[in-house]
Structure formats: C-alpha cells, structure tokens
Image 1 (tube, rainbow, N blue to C red):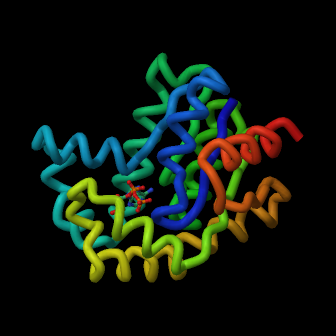
Image 2 (cartoon, rainbow, N blue to C red):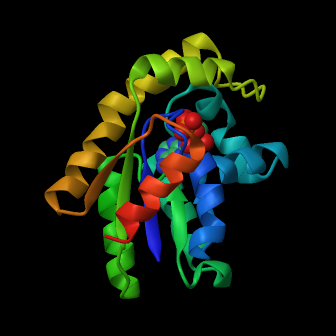
Length: 185
Ligand code: ADP
C-alpha cells in the first residue's frame, strides 16, 4: 500500500500517518521528520536545509526527490508507506511518478485533508512543539507557500482521478475512520 496523505500545514497529516501505520501495516514516510532529524544530528543534509526550513519556505525539489528516491529503496519501505509532506510541488509529483514507473510501482491512494485557514492557524499556533517554523510570521509564509506551490498538487492528482478529499475537522478517530473508508473504496 502506497498512500499519500496531503493537506496544508496543520491539517493533521503527521498525526493521522502515525495512527495509520498500525491500521495499514506500512510505515510513515515524512520528509519533514527526516529533515528535522537531519538538522538535529547536524548531518550534511541537515546543514543544507536548516535555514530554508526555519524560514517556512520549501527545500529544493532536487534535494527532496533524491531523498525520497533513496528512502523508498530501503527494505523497510518495500511493502509500501504512508507519505506525509511529499509531493509538495507539481515538479515533485511528476518526478515521483517517474520514479515509481521506473520501479514498476504505483500510488494506491491520494487522500487530501481539507481544513479551513482559521483552524490551521489556531492549530499551528497552539502546537507548542517549539518548532522554529511555528511562529506567527512563519505560519503565514507556510500557508502562502501551500496555496502557491502545493495546492496545485491536488489538481494534478484530481486530473488523474486519484484524489479523494476528506473533511479534516472533527476528532482524530473520526478523521482516521474517514481516511480508512476512502482507502478501502
Ligand atoms: P508542515 O506540514 O506542518 O508544514 P512538515 O514537517 O511537513 O510540516 O514540513 C516542514 C518543512 O519541511 C516545510 O516547511 C519545508 O521547509 C520542509 N519540507 C518538508 N517536506 C518538503 C517537501 N516535500 N518539499 C520541500 N520542502 C519540504
């Protein structure tokens, strides 16, 4: 099962991806988590992406696509994964399709979580994980980047008839059930 969880910052992708690991039996693959861990461990990748990530802007497509290509080739992702935070631009979506085609694989489901802006802003402001990019000015940047660069990814999967849109408001359990229903239909 190769699932893409899509949505704006604060939509709940990470929360849902973690819960779905148990339900679906495949691991979460979060590009944001990989970058944060690289920054924490001060690896060459971490050093490269820190400033751009802290600013709320997107890491370059080449860097992200290379990271995903390398990651999905690992044995723990052989049976699939729940992608969270990728693809985030149409160029990334196209590169991912090419990568999967090369591997003779395909995406099984693309699930978009829909959450109104006011709710996103309040969730991100209250997240309180001490993330450098969860300050009011960075949140504004990230929502702007989402609208400009990431929202077109939904249109890309819609055009391929692969997108399923889920209401992202409600309890974590209810949303998980909506996602499972969408995956199974
Ligand atoms: P959120 O969804 O709350 O913004 P993420 O952990 O998914 O959190 O992403 C945090 C940051 O990591 C992004 O603002 C961006 O700088 C970087 N990032 C993560 N995934 C990608 C990606 N696919 N392409 C470019 N940048 C990315």
